[in-house]
Image 1 (cartoon, rainbow, N blue to C red):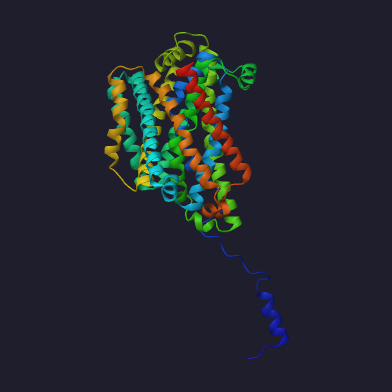
Image 2: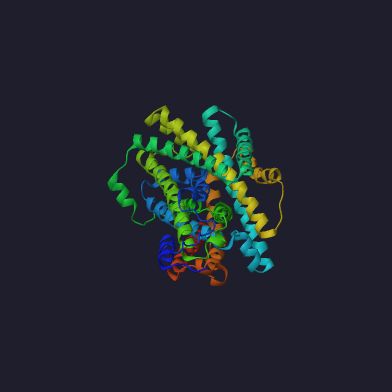
Length: 430
């Protein structure tokens, strides 16, 4: 069958001038539906340990350590971006990648220290939740610790319905924390000149260095380095397939960077608000030695509303961070050892040290500060493998770090390790 010139011209005019580009698999054009994993991680950056270290730092040294919070938050943004990218590029979490590429003795060592970090994390979160219940309702501390553990277990059950319900619950609790400190900050006020001076890196003796280490450990949380890498692959769909093209990688990277920027930015503002409030209201006040005294001081200076906002924020922090900590423990064991234990058993094991501290009448605030120092010593064991893995082109492909990214991450790791070493020498030998 032959077509006349007229018929051929009409047919040609009805065809598209360019063929449509094939759709990129599993990549959504809107970024906001892809947000969420970093907000789960961000809760760990405003856990009860942050309350203890930030208020202690502000009350003892004014605005001096504000720069530590800002620096730690910038480090957190870099670290969480890298761990999210590892999950996107490989479809596996950090612990699993370590198990696949490191000798077995090293893997067992990393698992052991990660479990110690999980116990220190749970100590901070259970103690914080128990203190909040005591401040709000007069619940005895040991009973409050059990209640916090049970609520965290219930919150974790939301994951059985998928990532999105869990993310919404955790994000809601994060907003409660942020709202509580925004309210209190308005009442306390901010000294702009002192804020500027607090941005100059300096210390005020060994005690301030100990608190700075605690602030760093409370801000850059090693357990969420593991958990964030486990959240991103499922949350972003088939990211490995979608990331095979430059456009697909670009869209996913924009989504996860926006996620990290918003979540870590909110956590950083909350941490800075804690220290500023303490510096404004409690500098030089020898009576501010615990979370209970902070609660009482806020009530005395700003009224019952500020005290209530503090207690509610502390309660939301304990509930949310404890559930994230339990999830991190599951990720660590499954990744490093390919083993699972019932969540209830894990809760009982990690709950024991916190209940021991509460039952023996130990000072909750001191326990919180030292738990954060333990976390700080755990950071290099997660950060160094993360940098090594994300700089390997054979693993990451087109997602591999740029040289400047690896260099910056290496400087961050060196600073943390150096700070830990100086703290050891100053505390135990000085």
